[in-house]
Length: 317
Length: 256
Image (cartoon, rainbow over all chains, first blue to last red):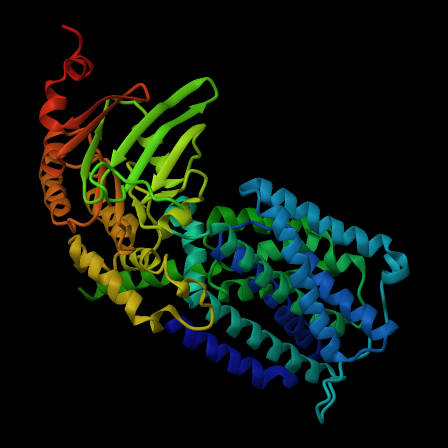
């Protein structure tokens, strides 16, 4: 409950501060919001259901390429690209899920990785549609048919914020619902869930598709934000970064995925000023997380709060 | 589909016909046939490795038999997946405690209580908005004596309390046939007596199959006994007959 209020406070401050921030920080915040949507969608399968997917960038890519292709080659507007991006990501997740969910553990991880590479390969090689390695550029700023324009970076920031709030609210309702609880049960004991009467596979499959759809939604915003889309938007490094956002922030909290997204986006932008070896830093962050905060930032905060309360009580006694 | 009837004319709760299961070259269960009438309380005993737990897994659907046929309340369930069998009124507990360790006791029971209801697919509002499921979960917790522990995390419970929760999870879905795999495993004599007392309060309408090593417990809870040895039924009947059976005495006490 306390955490929620803190979250709402942070949200309010973000809303107010947006346009006042220097452009560089506004950029970081906008990127954070979009990546947070992707990370939260991964959290649904990784944190809540206990399925380590290493191909989640594929859904970002599907959403982003839907925008790139439809807006530049067919002149479609925001709402069409949004609908196609989300539905396409969900459909591809539905197909991938059939393949990947036959496996568990590290095999699931390897299969999702391979399927992610398939989408990346398509983006690279299907040149007539995706323009291959060059990517698709000059994607127009989105026109929502509303009286104001999203061309400015402050206005786009608000669009990303609304998208983030919608995704957060939707995922939060899901994870707190009876269905969301079944996902946690599957994470804790699949065999018990089966004998209790749950069709475990079906629950995982639904979660996988929902995560894909929300990932596609992040991709739609990402393409409009950048104004271009290239295969590097969905390569393996992005999947790894997303996984790390969830692990670093704290699994199965949604808030954690958002915090993780903020840290990784900030770090990536800072590091890239000084060195090309971003993946090396990412590896160090991963080791640091596993070693010192296996439950992520949120878990560490929780422990710290419990510990300080204990200290306070002891000193009072 | 024709229902299978026992000699008394009522539909059998469970019928196994020549059920076998082999793992590679090892025959864990070799052609077991068993009729269990509704409301019957039966113990399944036998030395370690006799195939008792494997037999339970075959009945619950966690393992598929290599041969034979399994019928539950007159329905062929031989190849049905576990969740479909649960929907037909089957529940089981585990010898090695199998709970949701990082959830609270109440959340464990809620998962069990909603398992057979369509609301398990509801994703549009919070679980706390379903008072019927929460009430059912609390009711079962009270029944097994864990009402006061509803808010505790399962991994913080004592072993005895975890065994009680095992029973609660199995009861939450109001099963018609309950498989209990060594409910007193690892319990102290005092805890074991409490567990036995708890199991004696179960609705007499529930058909009960119990794997039990403790003969006192088995005798208190059941009236019929099936003895399994190397995956085969070596004795089956009222407990007096079974305990007087020379083969059973040989298995349990060694050849004289």
